[in-house]
Image 1 (cartoon, rainbow over the protein chains, first blue to last red):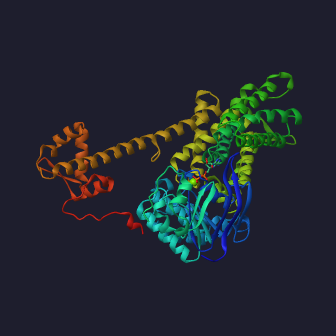
Image 2: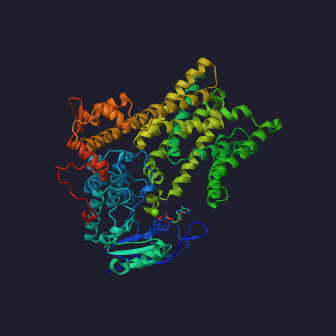
Image 3: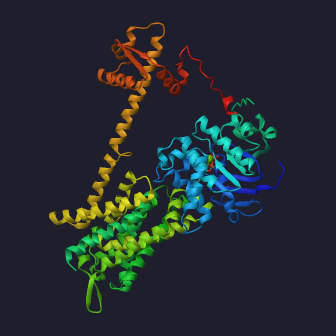
Length: 245
Length: 387
Ligand SMILES: Nc1ncnc2c1ncn2[C@@H]1O[C@H](COP(=O)(O)OP(=O)(O)O)[C@@H](O)[C@H]1O
Ligand SMILES: [Mg+2]
């Protein structure tokens, strides 16, 4: 688990209104690892991802991506938004969505050309969606929708990927397929930060885990920090957790 | 230029010029804001006329357009403070602003050549008569020139910033993370919307311009699967509505702008009912199909439970099914026919039997219901598979 910090967060605080949604977050994501972020609903997981991406303006603190602010490193970071935040009725096709992954490298005004389309088709093939290239996105199953956004992230050719609940609404087969792709990405040296909700699979999927509930309750190797006591601190004491690990 | 031709051209050019930005207004769920801008244009226009007179066209377009843009900024600022929830700030601001304009107009001595009537629905005939002059020669209706310029601007903007408009509308998070700032695109776009509304004001008025912006795009939204398709389709609906609206208004001797807007509303209604995927008819059809799909599964399940050990039991005939599941005869008939056609049951001498395919269908839909065929080893589905 050595290596430089791909993402380094210090004293991060975020508030949409008065009450902080994230409070005094310190977090290091070593490069080349898969880190899971878990925590109850509304604990600020999506907000953390959005803060790293500069989508949400922090009230204070510092976020460094490979040692520099995000704005200097845009091309090195890819993003998969939370399913529920996507307008599935938007008139757009699978290919069209995946092509959006190339917009960052194109910059303003330039349009995607043959190279971009080939890259998009390649990514679509990699996630097993070649038969659905021209489908409108509302005509896809949950798993297919998630694969589409994964393909878009792949096209971004980034080094760090931030994914907000990529397994939400996905069937077991797709989940396995996605995990396979994620593992291959790590083999290629990518860094993955994945918001996750299924506690049962945490220890199978991730090297590191961060338990989040407005504050960082614990962060570190899954074997060290992912235990019942920390889970109780994260999710509240009332609940019983039986981790069959 | 021939008056009728002038009117037709103004109608078509205005409708298409509105339909193009309208596409993004619909996708950005901004019809309410559009209405606000169209209302706040009136006091802007009146003020500009009072200050600069009524002849200097560019200022008369840009002044009110700035006013519209200011309203967009203001409304968004109020939204952010959370002082007023939801649509309330818009509902408060529009009528007030619009009233200011109407009050000034209604005081005759202000010398504003607008009537309370025409600010609502415009006057396309008057617009067609008001000529643009170069020296002493009239070179055609001024509104036609203004709207053509706006149409060209809208098309150029949309083509040049197509990908930026698309990604900031669909996924502002991705857009801002890759350096395409949504705010820049947003305000440039809203500036163009404001200019479009002001340009169209003379011909169609403050109320109907909202219809011209929203209705063709909303119709296309129900029919199209791509953004490009939606833009083209809304332009086509705008053109057809303008032409039909003009023809109908000519026959009925009614207001052209209102008849145009009515045609647009009519097309929207038709799309709402008959659109292939999203229309009411299609939805009812889908729902009925789902109901039969579910009933088919239920039928197989029923047969599985009654078939074991008691073949030829009365429950496994069509009549038995009707009695047990309490289906009306026609519905039961339809379901049985469908189930046989799909090969999930067989019918033999009036006795219904589940097939293997039927069992596996049940198993995939209702795994907890125990649809295993006793003769088949079922693979165990456990969480271990995930490892
Ligand atoms: N755009 C927003 N405006 C105001 N409040 C927000 C916004 N987004 C999230 N919140 C609030 O911030 C908190 C954290 O939300 P979020 O980061 O989405 O949590 P999670 O992803 O862990 O479920 C929640 O209480 C939510 O209501
Ligand atoms: Mg979330």
